[in-house]
Length: 330
Length: 302
Image (cartoon, rainbow over the protein chains, first blue to last red):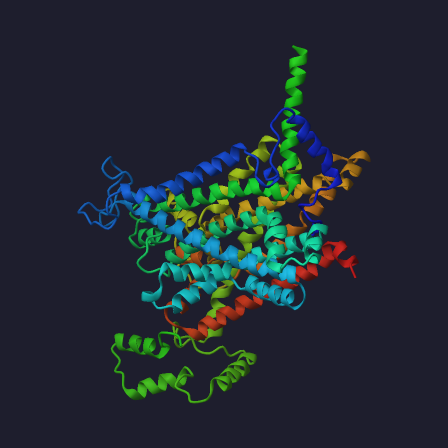
């Protein structure tokens, strides 16, 4: 990135925008100090939150409502009907039931990897940049090395070396986390470097605060939007790579994920037999969940980069002016 | 340390074909593959490095008795052609669309941008399955399997090349659709950020034509991160499409790697990884050199 000016520092050119924003909201109750850290509610954000909440609810509640996904019936590959809402697989298993359990499995892995990768990137990115010196050099070298390693390939090789019986979903999650933290560690490092030199951080350092306290109390709150957006990205990436891994048959043993569903669909010739109800729902589920998370990320991006937000505010003010003009004319 | 043994796999293959396996056969194979050796590891590694310098990557177990360098040489062009062309297409289309969407933020076109996240969140291989189902099975327009018509002999004949292009349309379409969104979004956001710069205002004040401002002032600066991203993604061209190649049974480097992994073919794995690492490192070097060329600001800093 050539844009090296710190993004979350108030800029003189943005002051009129902030004033305009405040002027627009005269009479609204005073906003809390957390407000600038939270994204503004827009139509797309509402769609995103809606999608994510619905899918999480389906993953949590779904498995209790559906029948046993492993039951084999003598009605292979039947199209969706009132009895089996999404039809059946080649061996007569209910696709909807499988989808519920698979969604739960995929989300579990996604969230676990998201948490692990974010923890790693926060640790390496922020601590390295804060400590400076040898630690910084070592940590950025490490993250650069991990950045160049093609993630999915390493995952494939590691997954193939771990014997099938020992390949639980924890193993897969750890492997995915280890290969995916580096990118966000770099982003966090850059942001920390810009925050580290601020006066209030120096002040608390000089007054003898321990390193962990300076990081946790002074630096972390400034980075929260960035961390949140990196977390959301990590979850999407993890779900996608897990699905890819399971699809080529190297996923976790004895686990139900959306990738394994696609794997069985592909190997059960769902494609050549035209059983669209078998292979469309799992991928659509991943796509919709990923879309929901990306839409949430869009709004977080506006918090990180206020220039993007100004665009929307401009538009809103233009609309308002037009309305006022029309009212004046009438 | 690692499970599985290439010698066992070769012997099992031999047995399947009706060969008899004695202790001597086992020993012969082990010697051939460089195992069953009492020399210390560090010395073996040195021997490997020496052979590497001479261009000898060893013998592949999966495609026995082909040499690893030959296996890679036959599969690399497929991947580079397919993924390379589709990456170039996706990047140029995405950047162009992003430039148009970001130029007038707030228009109906721009408000559609969030919808492209759906494209970015779609799993590559699932999109491939859907496209195969629709275009190949239902409509029957394009072939859904393989890299060329198997009746033809690979070579530089027009017949073969046109068949390769025909078979490559569907995988390329998959990659383009799935990666378009990311390019578009990155370019759009940079364009919006650039538009609020002072030099754009100056250009407007000077009364320059809109088109000139759009292309020479805004887009030229906004495209810098996309160019860097493009060079990096060219490095990942070699490795980027393992799963897509698997769906289409494409004869590229990705499916070779998968074969190697499932057969414990360490020599082939090492070879493929070497090629991928070289590609990624080369691309990163290219980015650094390119950046000095296209962005004078990085040169000015001492």
